[in-house]
Length: 372
Image (cartoon, rainbow, N blue to C red; front, side):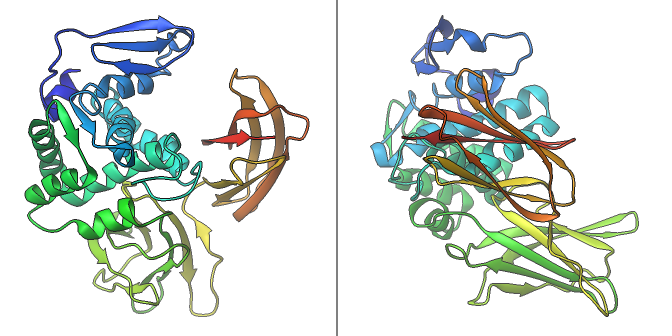
């Protein structure tokens, strides 16, 4: 609470507490209804405590203007799950939570449409993708301007309502430039996320090309590029403003043994790398193990799970129902690159299922709805 108050503005209510219940969670001014099953010793539900507490700023202190602006409540609070990790547990847990819980879910939305005025209000587009947009806005603006803008936004609209346009205006005032390009592509008009293919050559003159696949449109973003030369790290930031071909060539990193883009994980994206040589080219491989999509969602009866793997490795696919009971398990060895597995749930009941992919070092989870 002290951290939220320091970064958002003072806690304006006279008290705060949690009340255990058989179902939850839900915030009410001064009191959060909290699921009794989430009261555990391992702190595994801290994210939920952070989420509901933060609604006292984004929901109660400032309320979204109408349903189209719901992400101002829920996307903000979902990003506060990560901020709680940052301020209570530290930088490593914060980065891991953004990558594994927010970005992984945002790449697998329940429903379609934009964050503003979405087709479905209570899904990952509003919650997790809304949180990722806040994360990227923080990256674009920088910490000082971002948190100052949040405090100003709270003060201007305290005990009142605000729209997405209101929030954008406050951010632009502090950024001292337009952010229309950002809000259009991520909030008002754009859907999906960028998929980047990075091609580089370590033999001969330096060559680095970033190609953005045109899946649902191109995205303009500042992208950090790290070049590794033995033990040295060279980092540059490039504004990616794609032309109709979606290619950019960056050559002012004079020499590198390998490269990595967006090393701190600010951008909601998917990246593959393509290393060239004088005589041949290596296959395009992802930089990390990622769950790309679970579709269709809702599904009946077959769910296709698409993921990418940087190497051949053992993977276990599990499905759990809302009570945590195992509904399906399959173990296999992934191929390097793109992979697809299917789960036929014809013998299962309608409901929410958690789909989990586990490797020896990483776990990715997404929610899917079986609707018969």
